Image 1: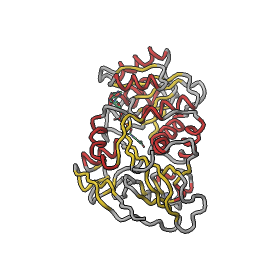
Image 2 (image 1 turned 90 degrees about the vertical axis):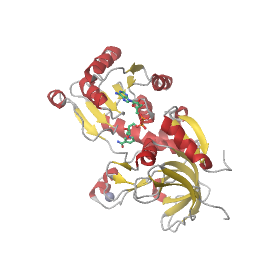
Image 3 (image 1 turned 60 degrees about the horizontal axis):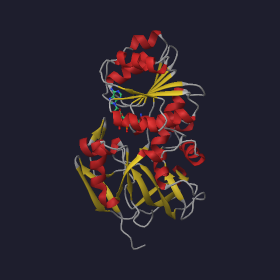
Image 4 (image 1 turned 180 degrees about the horizontal axis):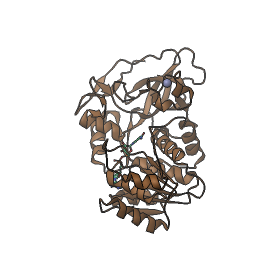
Length: 351
Ligand code: NAD
Ligand code: ZN
């Protein structure tokens, strides 16, 4: 095809470079994708700056990026549901499909999970990328490439709100108004939440949350988790049925416990320090269920339906746009945290 495969390679901690890589060929049940939109996630920036997240350490050069969409440019043997030219969203984690977790439908917990840009697996921030065809979802014509890329964080929101049991009439507290808190807000509303309160320490982010439909933005100005919980209850007029914690900050998890009504659910989406101090007896005696979430399983089709039908509008999340050649600038912008979602466009020829 006479094209090159510029790829955003993290060589080691702090050293992100554009490099030429061979154009990968699709194997059996795989498709080659001419990449279009790749969103930068906090984890991409974290690997770049720190070289590791928990036990996942970058020990060899790795291509970054996992919030992605593009156009099928070649199909491998056995692929029947996609053809060259199809626009697709890429679900970045491919599990083994054989273990008990996979068979039980909780494939996000599969020990063999190959997840883009989680070391040592290469991500998709490149001109061309090859992926398992059954983890690619054809986009309807009216759904944009950027919306396709945003199905990744949106799927986190779908999984979190499902685990939280959000339903018609729910009173919901979302802690943290970053990209993940905002998608949880959107999904909670779409699932029928009556009112959503959302906290943050950053007033600009709360302003965005308000524009995206939050009923009660709550500005956090103290590290006293109980005080913030009281503030939330006063604002909402009651204790939230469910809390979706999306900051990972210790005082915010404490707020999540204190605020959630007895018998309610607190979902921990935010991943902060591995060990924190929390009022566990308060949760125990009030039967507040604390549930973790890890990415998502079986959420892409739902996320796509929500976007395609107009139930959620993810477009306002994108605040910055860069070309693949401007990857370093894009990462710098994302690190500064000024906007919400930074999007990289890998295809020079497509809008
Ligand atoms: P982000 O850093 O952009 O957003 C976090 C927000 O929390 C920021 O706006 C920050 O100002 C706010 N915050 C900080 N301290 C706070 C406090 N005490 N009270 C209220 N708000 C506070 O990150 P993001 O991309 O939105 O991701 C959110 C979290 O979700 C991260 O910890 C990330 O690692 C995690 N995450 C988890 C999963 C999973 O599968 N469990 C998936 C994706 C992201
Ligand atoms: Zn498995």
